[in-house]
Image (tube, rainbow, N blue to C red; front, side, top):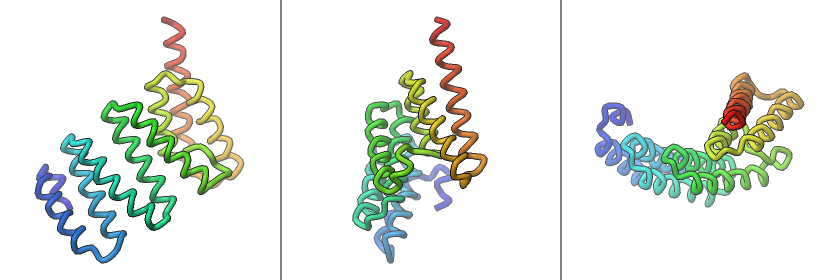
Length: 173
């Protein structure tokens, strides 16, 4: 739905709603809802974007798809974080982490981009020690299982650096 990039949000949502109505499967429905979410976020309509994400999450939950559920919850958390709704964002990130723990019990913390976004929230709340603990733990997982790429390691090192820097600023005040 490229008309989003031309700032034609109402047309984009109308097209996506039509796509949702004629969707042949849940994947197509989720894509239409995701497209609406993008239009609403770009337009600054946080509540509408979250409503679309709730519908998308419900499809994932009904299909018992923990990967999609986790992704949807993380995205909702990030939308709320960007909107400055920190308490609500934390709830969504915590819900995502609960899904994470059930689906991957050996990795009970959010990691990669999701972990970075959660750390961003924690940093905004001054929880520097928790960020250091989380990023250090996920870096250990990367070393142990060596299945991740440069991005995951870079994001955790960035979170660690930000936590140390912001903590040092707080100590200097």
